[in-house]
Length: 77
Image (cartoon, rainbow, N blue to C red; front, side, top):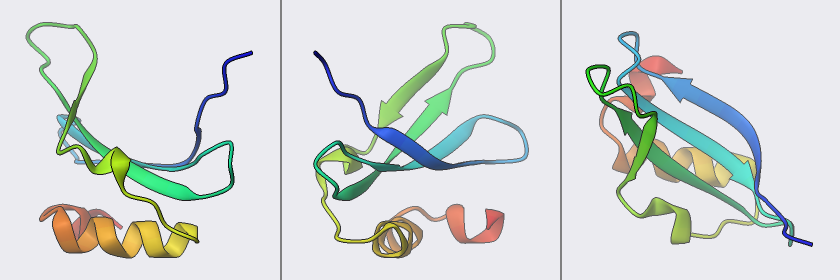
C-alpha cells in the first residue's frame, strides 16, 4: 500500500502561478514543497526548489523555514 503526504496548508500567490504546500509525511515528520504553474500550458503544478527533502519536527517549523527560503511566501500568509 502506497502512502502519501497529507497536505496541511496550501498557499498560492494571487495570480495562481506559484504555490507552497506544507505537509505531513506518513512517518509523522513535516515538510514543504514549492510549485509553479504555467497557465498557458494547462498541465498543472510543477515542483521547484527540491524543498520536499527537508524534514521538520513540527508544521510551524516547516512553515518558518519555507518563509525564510521562498521570497514571496511571507506576504501571502
